[in-house]
Length: 195
Length: 188
Length: 200
Image (cartoon, rainbow over all chains, first blue to last red):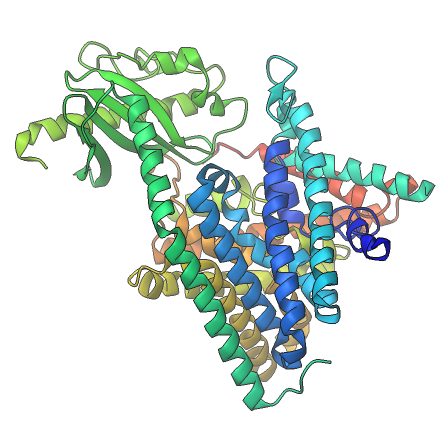
C-alpha cells in the first residue's frame, strides 16, 4: 500500500502542478479571487483529470500512435462536457462564477500532460491515483492562492470576514494574481532548497 | 506499446472513439436536460420574487422591442412586471432585473450579471443606500438619473459610471413598462 | 467608430493576457527572447483570427440550428486542433519561409487556451462598447475582436519579452530567479494596464 501512496503525495510537492511544473496557469490566476473559487476550480479539474487518466490508461494500448493526441483530446473534451452539464444542472451558481474556465479545462496542459506523460504508460489503478494526487495538488495550490488573495483583497477567509471594510483591492484584481503567485513560488523554492 | 498506425486502424480507432464519446455526451445531456431547465427556471423565479411584491400566479414570459433593442419581461398578474434590462457599465455589460408594480412605481431591482470593478462599481450589488433608493421609486414624480446629471439618484462613491449605467438600465425598464401598458391588454 | 472601440477595448482595456488570463502558459514559456516572442505572437494572431471565424460559422449554422450548443466545447477544440494541423501543412507547402518563422510554434497553439477562450467568448457573451447597447457580436465584429485581441496578446508578449531579456542579466535573489521574478514583473505590468480600464 505504502508503495502506491507516493503516486498521491508526489502531486503535492515533487510534481506540484502549480509551483513546480508551472502548468495550468490560466485557471490558477483567473479563478483564485477567493478561497472558495480556487477550491471549486481545483475540484472541477480533478474530476476531469481522474476520469480521463482512467479511460486513457485503458485505451492507450489500442490507440495507434499517430492519432493518439486527437483521441486523448476527444476523451478529455467529452468529460469536460459531461462536467459542464452536471454543473449546470446541480451547481448552477458555481458554474456561473467559474464561467469560461470550466470549458477551458480541455486545454489545461495538466490534463493532457498527465495523459501523455503518465496515464498511457501505467495501469488503471496507478493512473487513477496519479489523477487523484495531481488533482489534489492542483486543488491545494489554488486554494492556498485563493486564501492569500482573499485575506489581502477582502479581509476574509472562505467568506468569513475578519476585517471590516475593504481590503487591498488590487489583490482581487488581475495584478494581485500575478504578484501572489510569484511570491508564493518564492516561498515554495525556499522550502524545496531547505529540504 | 501503442498499436501500429495504419490507415485502417487509425480510421477505425477515431470512429470508435467518436461514437463512444458521442454516446456518453448524449446520455449525459438526456439525464441533465430536465435539471438544467429546472435550475434556470428556479433562478428566474427567485429573481422575480426578489423584485416584485409577493405573488402566487405563474409569471408569463414575453419580449418586446423598444428603440431597436429586444427586452425580455415576465408579467405577473396582480403583482406587476419584471423586466430584464442591460446597459454598458464600467467593466462590461451590466444586466439588471427591474420589478415594476402595477401602479408604475419601482418595487425593487436586482443585478443579474456584471463585470464591474471589485470594491468600487461592484458595490452596486451590495450598497444598501444605493439599492434602497430604487425601492418604491416613482418615476412619475422623480427623475431617474444620478444627481450629477440633474436627477434624484445618489451615485455610489467613486463609481459614477456604474451608477449611471445602473440608473439608465432602470429607466429603460420603465420605458419598456410604459410601452407594455400603452399596448394595452392586447399584449400577451 | 464601433470597430475602433472594439479594437481599443480588446488590445488595452481587456488585454487577453493581463486582464483575462488566457494563454498564460505559452506567455511564460516562450517570452525569454524577443525573437521567439514575436514568432509566437504572429502564429497566435493567425490562428486565433482564423479559428474564431470558423468556430463562429460552425456555431451559427450548425450547432444553433440543431440545438446542439452543449457540444460547443468538443466541437470547437476538435476544429481548432484540425485547423492548426492544416495550417501547418499548408504553410509548409506554400510558404516555407513563413513556416520557418511560425512553424515550431504551431503545435503548441492547440493547447493555448487563448484560442479556445476567444472562440467561446465570442459566441457566448454579450459585449458593450462605449455607450452602446449590449449585444452579441456579428461576424464582422467577431473578426475584428479576434484580431484585436490577438494583437493585444502580441503587444503584452513582446513588451514582457523585452523586459525579461534585461531581467536575465540582473542579479536577483536565488529564490526569485526565473519564474517568480517574471510573475512579479507581469503583476506590475498588469497594474499599469489597469489604468486603461473604463476608457471605452
